[in-house]
Image 1 (cartoon, one colour):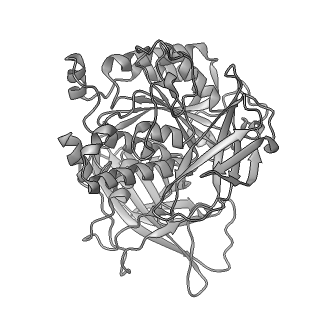
Image 2 (image 1 turned 135 degrees about the horizontal axis):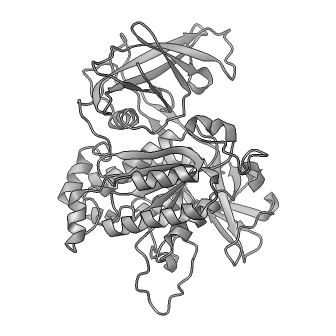
Image 3 (image 1 turned 180 degrees about the horizontal axis):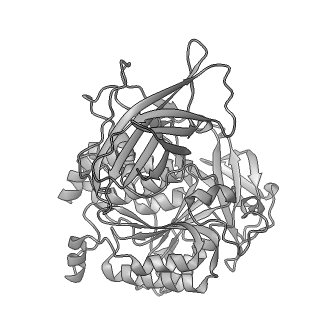
Length: 523
């Protein structure tokens, strides 16, 4: 508990999720600037994905807008937009065809969903994790060679988050990545588990939130729904946080709200599959699949606080918890398919009052009461804060901004919120960025200004960091300039390659929205 408290006091999830081998990344001063400002973005349109199942757990595909009712804090809402399941399908004629072999192919599938398989190596006991790997193999072996849904495979480890395989539809390649992966399990957690003690990392909450933040930020530019299938226990030490001071308690709540906001704005749905297996139950409690929703006894997760537990992240994004079963492979398959069959509706809240960022409850129902409805159960009101870079390297950078930059620069996870193309120059790189992805601020003379933060990290042939550099850059266009769908602007980024560099990781972050893009290039 003391270790967790210390981690929280040091800035919550700005710690061990990525290795820091050369110190923190700072941004060079581009010239005289005003003091740091904060941009607030208020989202007025609430988007909700809805899964509707019959009594046998089968998806109901033929409902229309008139059969849905939405309330927010028990107040009826007017559905503004409605998309049936057919609006999220893969492109026509793509069945059994390998459309996606990497993240670069994602634009080919339009608004279709993708799956993100995650091994939770931070919180899950060693034996359960081994069972989960076997279950993942069994699930994939039952699938066709060309997966119907593009899938990303990552492992949230004790020291870092590793990309086991980029987005692909190849079953065999995903199987190979499982077989060659070595778990990044915390040695202390493993020792405690073998000795019959507690399981889970001491700072599991911190590392878990960090991993979810990275994933949500990386997929912000993917238009369709992203289904995170989290195979593991998730952090379970939230109840211990009741011993924190009020100030630290508020920090935890703020961190979880930040992660929740990011996942919802990135159209992420989180499913959790607990590999613990069958646990003793009350004989009077039905042992069924259940809803996997709050209060469902079949999951083993009853009531929850939307501010704290891992289950809160599941329910606020519209996912489910599958637990208390010994067929984890079937559970993975169930969530992988369920995440592709959904309706999407949106509404503008009738009450704009967001004072103190209250948690606003959403309830979606259909006319037929025998049907089971699964959707996210709420969101945090208020405005989303986007940190900007301090105008001087002498000033401490906002913690969240530093985490975003260092995490993105020190992973192989593809960030596609900004589409960037690095071109090598004599003094570094010319970074071509899709103009429509950037925030353009009007100036007094009618021109428009975009600001970005750029981070570059050099790696040697052993994938060890050998140097890094960061800068804040600006680009200005005239009032008469027209930004087309393929328009690009260039940012000159000076970067002296460190000796021994064999790969350069470049991350660009938009100052207005915090959206990021990444690219890997060779000298």
